[in-house]
Image (cartoon, rainbow, N blue to C red; front, side, top):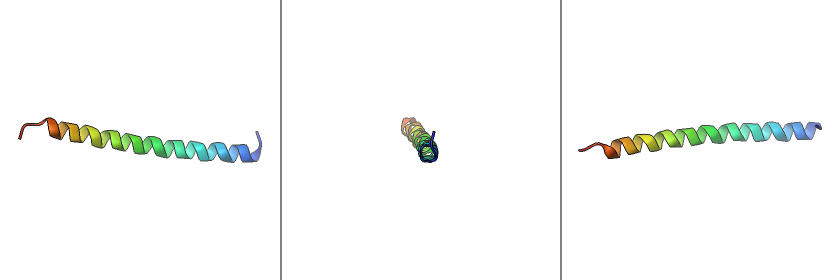
Length: 41
């Protein structure tokens, strides 16, 4: 593996971690909204 490959891998891993965090936050927001919508007012 060359240095450029290692840098590309690191960049992709960082982006993957960022996207996973974003997805988890959106899933949590979605669960909260579903919970609120399910309650009777």
